[in-house]
Every structure is written in C-alpha cells, then in structure tokens.
Image (cartoon, rainbow, N blue to C red; front, side, top):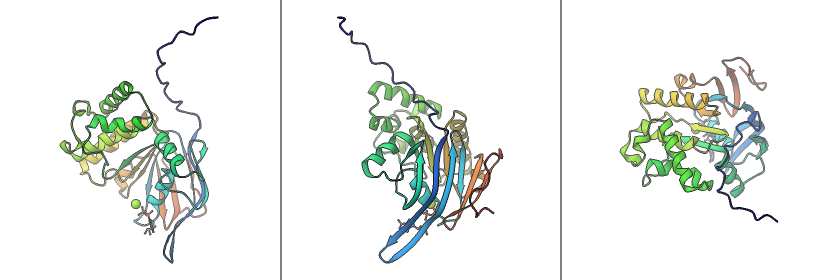
Length: 258
Ligand SMILES: Nc1ncnc2c1ncn2[C@@H]1O[C@H](COP(=O)(O)OP(=O)(O)O)[C@@H](O)[C@H]1O
Ligand SMILES: [Mg+2]
C-alpha cells in the first residue's frame, strides 16, 4: 500500500471564464415598493439578456427604475415576479445569506461614491473580496498587487484612499471589482463624482477590463459616458423602451421599443 505523500496545495485554478454564454437572463421581472398604503411599481415586465463579454450602458431619467433593476441584477434585492438567471443559475427565489454568497462570488461592484474603507490601505481594500472568498493570504496579496498594477496604482498600494484623488479612488474600486474575476461587473454612475478628464480615464479603464473579457453593466445618465459601451439599454417608467447594440447583433426587446 502506498502512503500518500502530502503535496503542496495546487494553485487555485482560474475560474472557467465561459461556463455559460449568458451572464444575465432576466425575464418578465416585476418589482413593487410598498410604503404603508402607498404602492409603486418600479419595474414592469422587464426582460433583458446580456451575454459574456458585453459592455452595456443602462440609461434613463431619474426614477425610471435603473437602480431597482441594478439591485436585482446585483443580488442586492429580490424580484416580485419573473425570473432572473445569473451566470446560468436561477437566483430568483434565493435570498439572505445564500444570495450574499452568490453576490460575492459572481459580481464586482463599482459605486459612484467609491465605497473604499478609509482605514485600510488600497492593497487591503482590493484584498477584501478575496478575504470573503477564502483565498490564501499570499495569493491575495499577489492578486491585489496585480489588480492595482492593471489600474496604474501599484506604487500607491500602501496608501489610504483619503490620500488619493477621486479618479484614483475609482481606479482602486475597479481593481477591487475585478480582482475575483467576477462573472459580472456592475457600476452605478461610476463617473458621477468625477471631472471630465477623470471620467474619461475611468471609462478607458472599463474598456480595458471589457477587452480582457469582462462583462460590464454600467448605469449612467450621461450620453457621452454611455457612448463607451457597445450596447445602450434605455429605461422609462419601469420599462425598457429601447435596446441598441452598435454591432447590430441584439435587437429591440419587448413590445415597448421605440
Ligand atoms: N425603497 C424604496 N421604497 C419606495 N419607493 C422606491 C424605493 N426605491 C425606489 N423607489 C421608487 O421607485 C422608482 C424607481 O427608482 P429607481 O430604481 O431608484 O430609479 P432610477 O435609478 O432610475 O432613478 C422611483 O419612483 C423611486 O421613488
Ligand atoms: Mg438610480
């Protein structure tokens, strides 16, 4: 009988980047908010499919349901009716802790206000998603440095967010969003607090992330920001009213296309 020889742990293999072609499949999604006796239906029969590698901008006036939809896509909130499949898994009826686990594994978030932890260095901020994912310490450090390198911030690794400009903070937030190689990157008004030059820098960074295969959904109300995306989906009064892909391979969806 052979005695098993302990071997050093194999490096964590990169997650298969293409288990399914559709990262998002949302069908007939409805969402109603209830405050006391007041009801407001924020999403009315929304269907949207997004394939791996797409860069999609979601536009629409204030109150049209963009953030509500984003919260559902991001597993931050549940839908009332309809179906939502994320990366091949039906998450429509999952909630609580289980939903948090899926969120941490599958999604990288970028917010308007950066949401970096002020007491942590950039390196530690970028490591956080990997802490939750139980990545070993040394690998965390290496991957965090790599991610910071990709956004041009390697030399700032030991600094705290407060020492950085808004544009630099958002670059660090993008490093944090991509470090776990999530199936989906969700950005809600990521350039909302930035000047024009920094906004352009951030959008070029999103283009690079997309060129490396990242699937991005970005909310914006600015047309020049949306123009960086290959596909633009417009919301109005809780419905998708247009869906335009520059490559022409995704048509309008739903009966409300204009
Ligand atoms: N938690 C909530 N409770 C009640 N109403 C809400 C809530 N969140 C959003 N709404 C309402 O739903 C509508 C859509 O909101 P939202 O999805 O945030 O729109 P957008 O992001 O396009 O500005 C708005 O009229 C808003 O007032
Ligand atoms: Mg919003």
